[in-house]
Length: 322
Image (cartoon, rainbow, N blue to C red; front, side):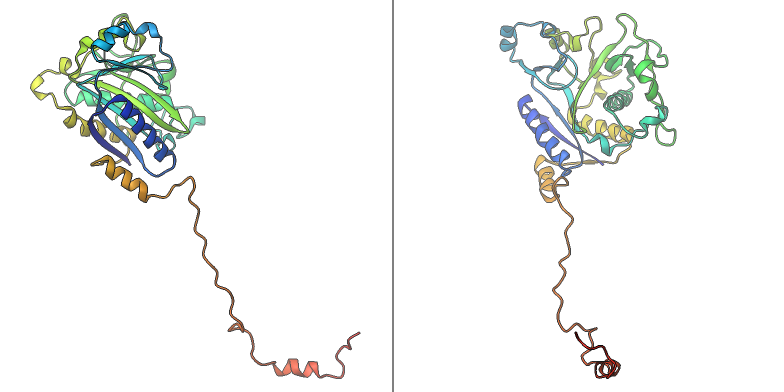
């Protein structure tokens, strides 16, 4: 099961702390898979592979505009988060999820690896775009979700084993577009971290984001493709949802793609209460039954010596003690 919670606007430092808390609970088996959905004030993040040169604004300009900067342990390069952007932090144990791909090498079996996880996250967001009539897809070797792509071609390289999903459950994953210069507008960025099989960080989906703020960076280190938003791509802006309305739709798409039921959690307090009531799978032991001390004489012990034994004991031919 995937439990999701919408938290509204949360400072980035607080969101990092909440992720650490939930990762610890998920690793201990005290909560299930949790999808945190929220919004951030303006913030720039630098992933493990980031280059400081992809931050185009000076520290003084960032401070003047109230934009904070964080170096974090997710994959990827420079990313912007801000108002009007739906942020998703899936705290999932990959070992608890089935791999729906049917074209993977046999030796991989049903395991869901980090790359598979990212591709399925992309698929959930592509389908979320489709809910509003916005065509989106993926570009080979460029993680994320893109609009305005040329006609997609079958993917190559690392995506070969992610081209199909069992027809019994889901339609196939969308194809991967062959990269062409300047093709595609990025609507969602993705970067994750995995430790002991549990994921953190996640995606940023532009809804009503002020796209001018992306001028502060080279988004994900990419300089030849612009960013976009659902507001800019949607046919009729009156159909544009609020982030709070979009959250359950995003959670539903995650449930469909990962083939898991979805349930809403009303508050962090409710989530923590369920965690407090759950045993710690890492330390819990199977209770042992207490065996009562035997009472004597036991009910199956003869209370009198049988006659046959009595005759043997008094027999003249019985052995003599040395």
